[in-house]
Length: 344
Image 1: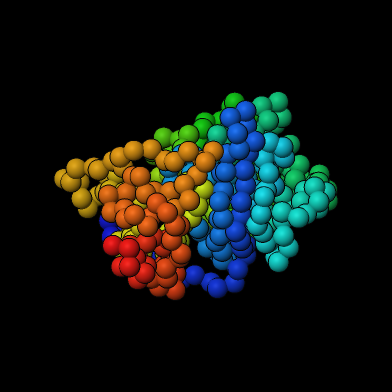
Image 2: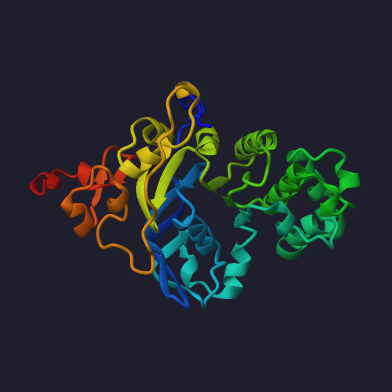
């Protein structure tokens, strides 16, 4: 459920202008028996120091592919990075060798996956899984790694950490397992944390606790976060900026206030109208009619054309250029382009 306008405004914070990550014109496809799926089609965005950027959209829009490409987890083949850059500390991760990329993964950039049970090794004690990264990447002694692991368990809210270090994943609840996964991701003090649907497998009460934990961690560690989610309630709680994805493209980007209260793209408006809001409980929800386009053969114009109630002829023929509504708010939509008057 989305927060009220005042709640959203109260959770907004100032953005630092130092870039941590730049994704530029990223194209990723997958070869299947049915043909080539064009999963990402020119994805571009920046992430700043200490910022939480939420990437939102329907299932299949390319959110997780974006995250996995940044982490270097796209299997090649069947995946293929056809074009683009992923610049972290001015180094292109796409062009890195596997050995160099391994030094970045889990150290400078970490990832939290959706299901904590599959992210943890059921045959190893929690202590072993926590200290592995420290001993591998930071070359800490067994005693030093053990001490730091206990400190990290304390930070993420695991009670009795010394006793818990000796236990196995199945001995923890779902919420506790997710806290452990977060601890493992943060143990080497990364600059960038990617969270792919981190609360989807949890009940509502535990979701709220995990979100509060993310906020607290960011305050303490200053880590930059990319949050992959379809849950706009989660976004309203912790995001600073939002990138809306559709059919392998980012179609609108803005800060939290701009996306929630002055959305410009019809798809963004459709997403917001299809989820309940605390300040509009009596209004009927409005689902987005139709289905996303086939990415085996994506449309040459705006991919939302067939579902858009405001579509013009030009929308299906030419993809719109980005229109800057403010320094932080950019939208790809012909309705925002002055030239659209020539086609109306």
